[in-house]
Image (cartoon, rainbow, N blue to C red; front, side, top):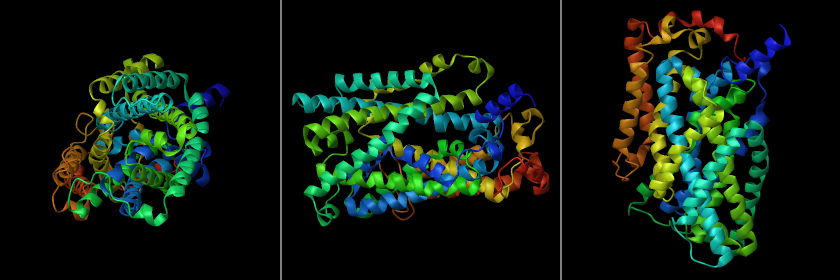
Amino acid sequence: MNPAREEEFRLAAERGDTPLLPSERVWGFWGFAYANSALAVATWVFLIGGATALFVGPKQGIAAIVIGNLIGVILAAASTCLPCGKYGVEQFTYLRGMFGVNGSRLVYFLSVVVLTLGWLAVLGLMCGRALDNLETLVKQVPPDGDGAWVTGGALLAIVLAALVAMRGPDMIRRLSAVIAPSLILIMLVLMVLIARDHSLAELLAMPALQPPFADQRVNFMIAVEINIAAGFSWWPYIGNLSRLCSNQRTAFWPNLLGIFGAASVGETVSLFAASTLGSSDPTAWMRLAGGMTFGVIALGFLALANLTGMVNILYTAVIGLRQLAGERLRRMPWGVLVALFCVIPVAIVLCFPGIYDGFFIFLVWTSALNSALAGIGIADYFFLRRQRVNLRHLYADPQGSPLRFCKGFNPIALVALVAGFAIYVVVFNPQTLAHTTFFTFASASLPSCLLAGLLHYGLTRLLAARCGWGGYAQGTERNVGAVGLGAKD
């Protein structure tokens, strides 16, 4: 094969147009663990730790962080990292086997586009709050709340994120290489400042900031649910990270060291900071914790770190959008597509600045979707396909493939998704915090995950073979030929 043709195939695999061969994978165990850790230790751990402190004190909060993140990360990774890591397939291309070509586009829109728009707005507002607190610290004036500094800073952050994303992945890698270690250093200094003034016993004895219910079991389970949602929030992204791993074991286990371990440590530090400083807002901690010098440096890095997180999720979302979009959108210039993607976050910042203070509501709503998607993924990969995926079906013309389903949509998976989402809201409403007694024992994410998975499995076994959908009835023997394209276990 000539060099030009080789480069064409390499780029096609890198962009997700074809599966990555084992020789094209770049991450071993420690490489993936480091990459996960760098992504996990970002500004969102400050927000999640601060949100946990609203409901429980540090003693219960640490338990909620560990339990919640462990559940969310394991289920999210099992449903995405194992198949994508084994076969080197792009995550939303892989979802064609569950939802159909058009169904995978719908899932992408719900789980990536909509959620990314919300994350861009939240992180932009956090950047604006950091700048507002920086002005408060330097000029010794009261914080501006959601005033001009915050709004202007948020809009500026979104514009800068778009400009950096237009420059491509090299600029993103350079920023991430500086920001991740800097955030870890800020966390360490913050913890030293907290430990200087409070013993461990005093820290563990501190109360919750704003517990909404007299029943501590309910408050604790809400804290657990927030952290399950934090673990599940990685569902739309870690599949495409894991396809770069050497095999499926390497694609799965580093998540427990990286995403779970690093995020849990960062959230615990944030929990202590929120409890001792009396605020769930990370930008206020930097102003209150260590005086002028630390405050100015920390707030400056916090603003920059938010920008880096925004660029990462914006770039990932637009790459996926181009992968799944029609030809007209693919021909659109990259810069124009990035700019259009940022229009709605700008509108959210202008019209709904309160999304920042109600961050945990937004986060928990994402779990209502992601928990159901994880349940469907586990049922499909482990119990219906028995860990064997026919890659030819995934990349074939939908009209002649068993994955055509019903006009490109798999009604079975969509019914399971709606049912999982609905049971979540019935058990626990993120908007109002209304809940059933069952919630205090089982959370809302686990029933959603279980119901969606059972429905997908049961209806598929009952109906898919009769309708000729999904290639499930063709047996594992027909799938063996495709396994050679993936990495060995």
